[in-house]
Image 1 (tube, rainbow, N blue to C red):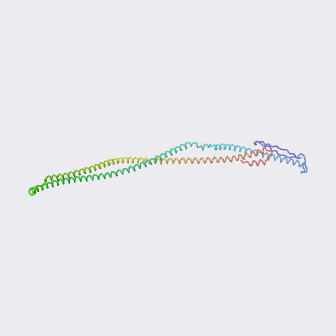
Image 2: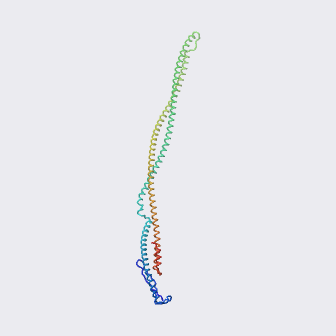
Image 3: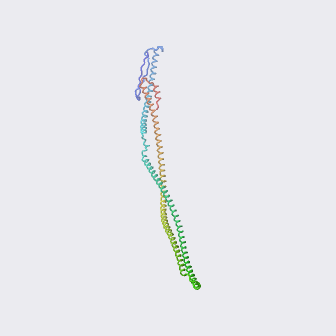
Length: 385
């Protein structure tokens, strides 16, 4: 009858739990083995060979367990190092997810500069808008002044045209006055001539009457009084001459009064036109000076506007450069965080796999089934260092 006894081997220090390997060793108790022909010597030889093979197996088992124990210790040390690295990565990832950035990538020191630059851009934009509004107002005022200038120029041209017409009327009135004066002188000369011829005719008639009176007194009977007749005729002609002279004088005086009224009116209109022309000339000079001032102000404002626009464009370019740099740094930071996340995912999967291997190893150590050296070797070969 075959019996079995177990050789208990304790695992050296390094395992988390003590592991005992029990190996069955078979020997004979003096009983003959039928298959071997019942030879006692053969049984003893078999017992010695079995015991030697068991001792060899136990020795190999100890070496294997020692090797496995060393490898397991190294594995656990690497697991501890990886867990510490994993903890550090978790802290860094948690800080990155909570919004905190590394001290090297801290952009808070640029916030004051960016705020100041934005404020300057806003102020420059407002100043630019005010300058543009002032230029527009100046343009509108310039257009208004141009309209007023054209209106005043048109009024001046009308006044000058009226002055020319009045001068023509005045010249015509002067010519008419000269003609009338010539006519008056001619009429006076004619009157003097008529008076002279009248006196000559009267004298001649007196002579003829005197001669004819002698003959009448001799030959003819006594007739009418010729002196009386002559006096009547002379009174009649003098009356006619006085009437003509009075009519001519009245006509001449009326014409002179009309001409004088026209000349007075023309002189007043001419004086008023000259005063208005001088006033319009002064006003036009004032408008020209103001127009030149507005043109100078417009040119100055346009120059200031160009300088402000150039300054704003330079600041915008600088800000765009800063923004591009910040975007590049942000992109690099995101790439770094993504790489760390990938490393974290790899380490996390490795940790899960290692925990699964450790759990499997614990089950093998704590389970009812005793693991063999081949099973331990296979499990440890699956572990990734």
